[in-house]
Image (tube, rainbow, N blue to C red; front, side, top):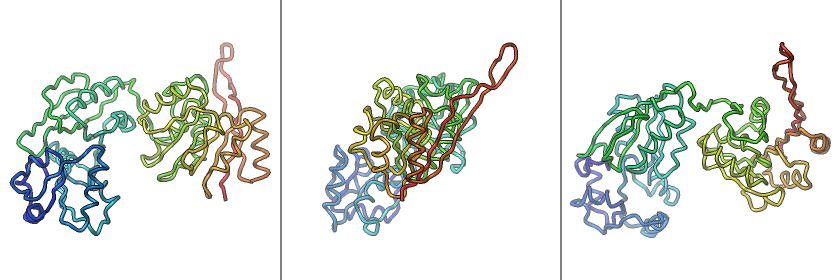
Amino acid sequence: MGEDGPDGLGAEARRRLEAATVVFGGARHHSLAPSLVRGERLEWESPFEKSVEAVVARRGTPVVVLASGDPFLYGVGATLSRYVPVDEIHTIPAPSAFSLAASRLGWPLQDATAISLHGRPLALIRPHLHQGRRIIALTSDAQSPGEFASLLTAAGFGQSRMHLLEALGGKRERVRACLAADFNLDDIDALNVCALEVVASSDARLIAFTPGLDDALFEHDGQITKQEVRALTLGALAPRHGELLWDIGAGSGSIAIEWMLADTSLRAIAIEQSAERAARIARNAEGFGVPAMKVIEGTAPDALAGLPQPDVIFIGGGGSEAGVTDAAIAALKTGGRLVANAVTLEMEAKLIALHAGLGGSLTRIEISRAAPVGGMSGWRPAMPVTQWRWTKN
C-alpha cells in the first residue's frame, strides 16, 4: 500500500482486506485504510519477532499484512518469507519508495544505486560515494537527512546535491533540494527518502572498487598489511558470495575490511589481542562503511573458541604463537581456504613446515619502492613476505 491509502488499492487488494479476519500493520498503515478493515486490527510489536510469531500462529486463517510499497524490497515480505512457505503467501506490491523517487527525479532506476539506511548505520553509504554517482537512500526518520548531510560534508562530498523526497505518493508529498554542505531544511517528514547526485572534492574520501586501498586511508600504528601485499592477499583469499572470514591478528583490520568491501554478502570477524588496536579496527570499519564487521579482542587460539565456523581464514599476525595455526586448520570448513603471511623467520619456518606436511602453495612477495638516495633516487626494498595458501580437503 502507498501513502494514498485506499485510493491506490485495486479491486483484489480491497477484497482481500475486507475479508481478512485479522490485519497486521503499523499504526500509520492502519490510519491510511480505516474504512476497509473489518477484522481485528493488530499493530506490530517490539521486538518484531513477536509479531512474526503471531502471524505464523494464525496459519490457516485469512491474514492480511499491510506494508509500505514493495514488501520484498527491504520490507516485511522478505522477513515473513523466512517463516511462511511462499506458496502460502499472496503479495500485491505497490511502487517502492525507490521507484517513486526515481520517477519524481526522472532518473533511470537501473542507473542509480538504491540502498536502505532505515534502521541501519548511515556509514553504509561510504563505499558508494563516487563522483557522478546517483544514489537513492531510504532513511529512518526526520533527523536522518541532516545527519546524512553532515557525513557527506565531513567526507569531502559537501558539494553533492541532496534531494529530500517526503511522504511520496500521499497528500503530504514534497520534494526539496540543497547542497549537502548547505543543508538547512526543516520541518522534515519522518517518512522520507534522500537522493544524492555525488560531487567529490579533491580531498574526498573515495573508496576504490579494487583491492589494495591506499594505506593512508586506514588508521594504523604501522601494524598493517601494506597496500601491494594486501591486494595480492585478497586475490589469494578469493572472496565468494556469502562467505565468512576470520582475520587472525588483524592489526588495523585492513584485510577484513577489504574482504567485506568486495561484496555486501560477505562477513568477517577480526581477532586482535591489543585493546587499542581492536578499537582502531572498529573505527576503520565504520570509516569504510562496513560497520557490521565483528571485532573480537583476545589472543588466539583461545579467542577463536565459540566463533561461527569460517569459510576462509587469514593469519597475518601471531601465527607463530603455539597452537594458532593448528586451531585455525581445525576450525576451517572442509573445502575452506587458509592464507597466512609471514615476515619473521620463525613464522616463515612454520609455513614451510605446513607446506611440506599439508601441501598448498608457497609464494615469496618482494616489493621495492623508489626513495631518495642522496640527491638521486633508488629502490628501497620492503620486508619480504612469505605467503602460504591451502585448501582443506
